[in-house]
Amino acid sequence: MGRKPDERITSEIGREICLRDNVVAMLTGSIAPLGNHYVITLGAVNAQSGDTLAREQVEVDSKEQVLRALDKASSNLRQKLGESLASVQQFATPLEQATTTSLDALQAFSLGQAEHLRLNDEAAIPHLKRAVELDPNFAMAYATLGVAYGNIGEFNLNREYVTKAFDLKDRGSERERFYISSHYYDEVTGEVEKAIATYEQWHQTYPRDTTPIDNLALAYNTTGQFEKGRAASADAMRNDPKDRFAYQNLTVAYVGLNRLEEARSIADQAVAQKLDSIGIRNMLFVMAFLRGDQAAMDRESARGQGTHEESIYLAQKAASQTARGQLKTANETYRAAVTSALRSDNKESAATMQAAGALRNANYGDCATAKSQASESLKQVANGANRPFAALVFAVCGDSAQAEKLLAGEARDYPLDTFIQSVFVPLVQAYTAMRHGTAATALPRLEAARPYELGNGRGNPGLWSIATRGTIYLQMKDGDKAAAEFRRLLDHRTSAALSELVPLSQLNLGRAYALSGDKEKAKTAYQDLFAMWKDADPGLPVLVQAKSEYGKLQ
Image 1 (spheres, rainbow, N blue to C red):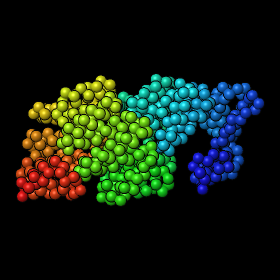
Image 2 (cartoon, rainbow, N blue to C red):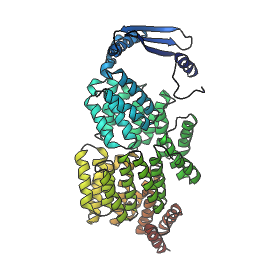
Image 3 (cartoon, one colour):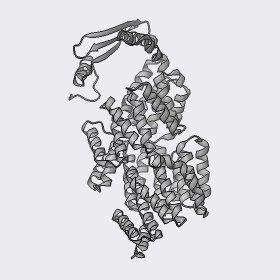
Image 4 (tube, rainbow, N blue to C red):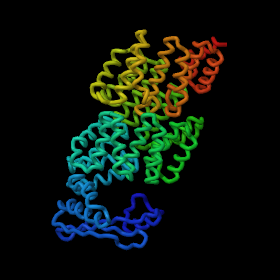
């Protein structure tokens, strides 16, 4: 429309939007001072003709009575528009209970919610913090504030505020209780299946509400159910063609399904309509990496420079460098990412990035650097999202006691967490068993991770279980079973394209074929690895070892 995105929407502009989008009716409202009194007016207008469909007007004596009067007026208006009395009563918790008794807090929340829906959580947080300062019992503001913190990687603050919301959830409406409870199970207790069940119930109750279906799609993608994620995202997009979350989730689902042309088409549509987000940009980076388009990768990385999201772009760039075997450059980029996150005061995010970089070093065999980085990460934040990754660093590097100590803390603090209990704990146990020469005993425990193996949640820990299972079979000298595991991981590489587990699985596939006596397949597997690592650090120890092993096959 040639207007600024933050321009105030008047009734005239609102009607023009309705005409452009073929919307049948428009709701209007005003709260106007009249001396010491306030007049609340609500109206429903036929967007095509401009005729009034229904109107309510209430006058109150003070500002404190505004929300109560607005609640009454809205219920009356809904009945005039044809909603049954039973429906109005079922879905009409009074506003002063459902949201807040403070009009100023409601205004601050609305500003924060608008930024959150634009996926601009850094900008949303100050408004949402102001809302809970003005009303310490504002459940929905606490919940949205917690979700916003989670979106920028500050998971301790995420859990703190969502828990506060959960404690206050009975003050909310039915829809708000769905929002709060589902995010509590998803982000605080970590009960993935319970969260999915709550999102599904919410969606059944409010089928035109895109929020539950968006979160369902996200949960499906997180657990590797990409076809379900695709269907849910498409459903959300049908309900709201301008839903940013739907574009983001649908792109992720298509990438996970290795349907890259469709993923790129959806991402391009989002960009063209200015509905893109850092999630869309991350997927464009991943797709550029998969097709070897360095110029496109550089363009996407450059978008983060000088922004609040700079550290996320840098961490992704570092991951791609690690996957290519460029460990020296990757370590420098990770340091820049950590520095950028700290500059934005995102301490837990910085610590998690540092632990992730440490884990990549551990996988490449540089345990001295890895353990130092993991220890430094834990000094910065002792019990954040970095702790499981630090535990894996020590497990990979043979310090079983420290690894088990860290995971014991996770298991104690999050006893119901699906990924902690079903993935991370069995992984640490598997590495301990391999260190003690009893790897086979860990295989049954790794079965708990199977439902989540292909998902993209929590740094793809599920893929770790596939790779670890393959490594156990190698240790057991069972080349055929080892090869099956590594082929499975490589067949689903798009869900973790930037993970170092992809080239390392390619290496281990060659080892598995050699163990089985299939020299030609082994040689091909090594050659594919060398293609992946054509720009790797020449002295990378694991590459040197791979070349030595390949030489023995000639």
